[in-house]
Length: 330
Image (cartoon, rainbow, N blue to C red; front, side):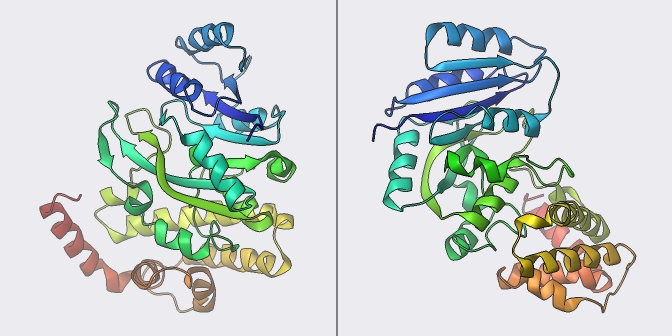
């Protein structure tokens, strides 16, 4: 395997961890890489740090943005500067194990896939293990294995962690532009969705990244709904998330096959309707079924109660919250 792989690193105020991440990328046992870095107007020493690395290693190319693009458009900028047949995404605060690039590329070739993604080890700011498997903690692994090469994989919610991705560059023309219609649908969700509709995917159970969690993470393992005491709070969050995701789908319906275009519209209208239902809803249950039928039974029932019969779930939700507090899981 002699192909050059472009690794894309978007930075913003990342001085605390970016050196360690860059070093972990440069020290990969697969050395035929280019590291393309775009800094989004950092206010700390990140630009100085990455420019120093550029001067030391010819494989590094640095772009300093003149105005803040935001994380999604910064990644889109990087995608537009890919020069080779394969690209990977990297976060500024993680740590790559030495075999990450090689193992990802070997899996892509072995599975004859267009994109490979994988699990991660969740660590604290000092790289101590918090959760051995991100996929298990977020309850993603079973669904990924079951629906890896169907359009259901990344439809209802995101199962693809961007920093694990290795993808063929020929698909960039389908990926960009990345929508910014809603903060509820971020770049890795979109990339995973587009690739599930257009290419063959492969998944690595092995963890080749230490996925660092700290106070400045934009996206991590924190489950916002765990802090809610009332079912109405969870319901409002869930509905708003689905409106953001499905609203983006509807605005970009042309990327979907016809039968999914119709589902997108019906599902978006279903969640709009739910906003006006406070206790019980008896409409659109067939739409709910079409959306959630691929989920496990407990997830299906929990979401059905939250969305359609919150009046029945209030007491159970409060009791559940108290029990989880006692068990120190809240």
